[in-house]
Length: 487
Ligand code: NDP
Ligand code: BG6
Image 1: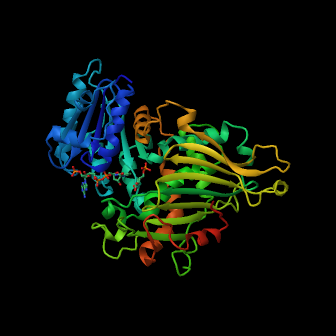
Image 2: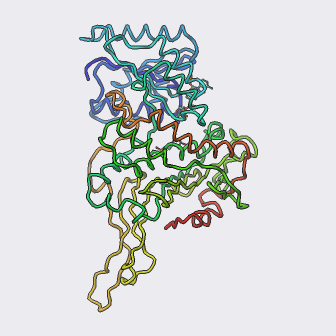
Image 3: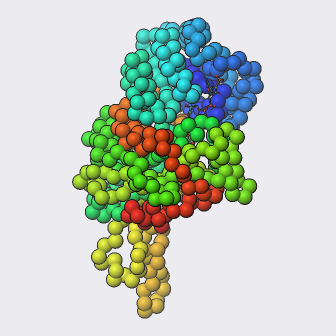
């Protein structure tokens, strides 16, 4: 990639830029994935002192002896201006042209990648202004990376989509769900379709349930104001877990191209029933969903203790729901989605639980069922919970559950796994949309969740308040009543 590249980060003073974006760009430079002519522009409403800005926002970069951090930060500049100030975008564009004009062998042409790391309330103004002022000259590309949330329901997504697609082609829009860049999720198609043993049993005939779980041992950590308007279903389930679900449940695409993957995903989503709240069980359980909210436990403050959260908020920080997939492959198999903040550990895993077979009984180990577990984080791993004979010469064979384990750290010793944002930047720079979210799948994703979310927003059902670190009371019973056994 030799053409100059300018990366503009709108909202560069924010949390995401600091935690993920600058460190990801550093790693890509370290591994020489980005062109030598690289211009990084932070955009924000108020002017900054550049060295102080860099110190603060690049503090998370882990410097590698192969690439001095100052070489990277010397590429960063800052442009101050309002998100709705035409004149500021015109100045920004002029400064990018000036940069491009000075690059060797560029003929004044360069590629431009705009990352919208700003609240959704300013998406519209930024998209519109980039379209008017920021397009690359002919020969270069203009691409926009847009962070979730992509709207808050079907209606708001349609509005956002109308706006972005009136200014840019779908091939220029890179809607980012960083879970799609996580190594274990990326491995699902390989696991399913490069091996011979999984696909034949990947159906209702052999699978009892599929469990997708996300837990964080953190609360809202100062993002309570944002979180309260969103809730855990919009924050995690409707996007991160739903993307993992799509890779687990979709039919094999006819090719691993972005277009064919989207077709397979959309076809799967179309077969998923729409969720509605349904009747309450007197606790946090309803027909389609179980809701919880963490509360103070020991030194851990509760959700309502966060000063940025409105008093008495009923916003769910924990939710579970079961998706039904109406296809020949999956009819009757519950897909249990569970997500919670303020839980006992930080973990995200996908668990496929297999049905018992009639001959299992003669092995004398009762109630044991195989599970295939894909651990996305921490410590990426794939393992199968199975049964083995205990070694020994006793007459009676003793069998016990064992784990057939493939931890990434052991299997791929020394491999560089990288952060999801690195992959997402890189794929966008390469124009590969296969890991980004298409408008077609978002229409379907919102169709599944919108009625449920509207009912929660309007009826404000009481979530079960549960101590930080513990599951809400009633959750396990609610899950069991839906045919799911949790190990
Ligand atoms: P922040 O709240 O930190 O905001 C980012 C920047 O946007 C701020 O530094 C500020 O920059 C500008 N900004 C903030 N509020 C407003 C406002 N009301 N009007 C105009 N500009 C504003 O957000 P994050 O960095 O946490 O997230 C950025 C985007 O990424 C959001 O869409 C978020 O939902 C999404 N996201 C964030 C994740 C995270 O872990 N933080 C994870 C996944 C998605 P300035 O004042 O300099 O203009
Ligand atoms: C973000 C959510 O999309 O993902 C956050 O908005 C959550 O609430 C984060 O903490 C989790 O990402 P990761 O990569 O740390 O699992």
